[in-house]
Picture (tube, one colour):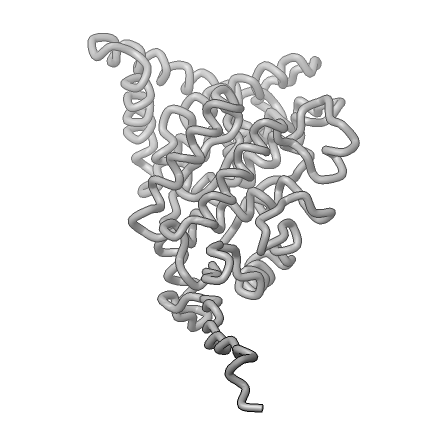
Length: 337
């Protein structure tokens, strides 16, 4: 399972201003959001109804539930390569440990969603989603995965793109864009590859035109009235066609043949890169169901349980000690001497 820390680098999640304390703990969460999420996770773990029994210890002596440290340790070492139990005092559900990291905390949240009971998972997701919405609105849940919300860029969605080739090209583009001195010629080449991938038929080579028309129509239908879909779709299709012509006919983008047009200013390459990526972002953000991966947390849980031969129905219980019979109090007057 590819959890949060495997999909995002902490540096890609932070704003421009960050305290040294937050930087030391991979900090990117606003404090109110961090506090509310931690308290919600404590409640979910301590409740009897949300998590599978094998992940929780039910202590009948103290009437408290808490995480089973050894199970959590084994799970995280197998899937993440580090001990996620280090970020919290498992018994007291206290997150103020020296090993706490925001990225690792989000790993824990995603694990809790995966190993939630089937009949309670959606309720759990809804509870967390409300907190994200009320406190931050920067992060959202997709299946069990937390991702950074961005309504104008695909950058935060790159780890969730279904097609591996498209994902790698998008990652290459956004990495280049973060440079303090962007290479617009290189960005134009990469973004041209992205646009070509996006509007290429996944089935047959000769069906690309039909596929492009269908994709443009779907996008148009998302953002305008039914009576205007045909016109907007045609305009979008023409924009894609013109942008592809720039990619093909400007030298050193998709071709280096003699017939291509040489240009001597980076502004042209910047224009082409912006055109390509703007169309890409419009399409992907309009149709996430087609381009963004969907993973079934229940299936992931079952695969994990089967893979390691776990008995998911067995829980951990600390029983109450049996009360010893109280010794009968001896009356001095009853002693026969």
